[in-house]
Length: 437
Ligand SMILES: [Zn+2]
Image (cartoon, rainbow, N blue to C red):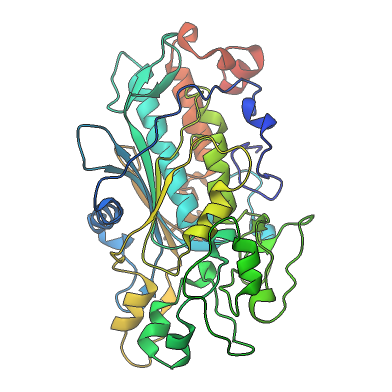
């Protein structure tokens, strides 16, 4: 099943000129870009806490095994003045990604179950439900309103979208100079744990070659590349440059990586075809969060007002380089780091584990979309958790955020809208035959 939303190697960051048209050739205006966002005091922790609280309200099977499994969490939130408390509308957890040979050509499995990507798929389901509320049967959405044409929708005035991730995204965001080498080299176990990031997202430490003194502060975005090569040691990412990009030199210390290149996701064994979370975030910031299907109803790109990261090794300069420093950015989000830690972070779980217990990442990916049918689901290896062997390959094995189910939901939405009320792009003959009308 072809899916323009799918996140595979070929989906590179677009050039500036490509941003004026989406995949269906419709023009995209950036005239409705929101004004710059000024976060209130304590905003990063407000965002993080809202996501942790919502996660704690999910059914028990969302939780990793106590004192044994850790998890990564990501979420989308909406805010609307005068309310100061953002509302969590989608959550995702996960740290796994299928290799190329495990992918489903018919879109029945989740290829990429990193928390950021699961959360974004959950967010698109939330948006689909809101579009339905706004356009079917005279209903009303809390967040969306009809455009003047009456066929398309947009965010209501003042509504902002925020993104939270409990960890630094894998890929280019994760490559930056290490701080506190002295602390680390002193053998302080707690300091080492504090410096650790997360498994396949983990920017791994490289042994110091010459024991040189560490940088006291992180560099500005402008001179980051120079500073990475000048640093005595950097964090690593398991994400590999895509074919055609400059290869990593793989030298010891700071010479291990190149920066600013597109990368595929890390994975054990077979190489993955999914782009790193840094690259996907960069793409969402340029094309909008809604994806190609929903852009039929939401033609204006949905942008982020803030990106908040949890307590984890982090560099704002590296985040700027990876997310903002490439061409085509629609609007610059506020970047911030929260101090409050996720209950199931690797650091906290390792701290609470009994002696000799091997602490591992949870194999599950949790998805939650506020107010949707099938609001909460858990998947393992891209299919529903607990599905029997016999049911594999049947609809019972599919999670609601997989490509096939999303397409089905989209078609059903289109069928429920009166023909004359459909957006123009869905009323041509080809579209109507796809929709079964
Ligand atoms: Zn990732």
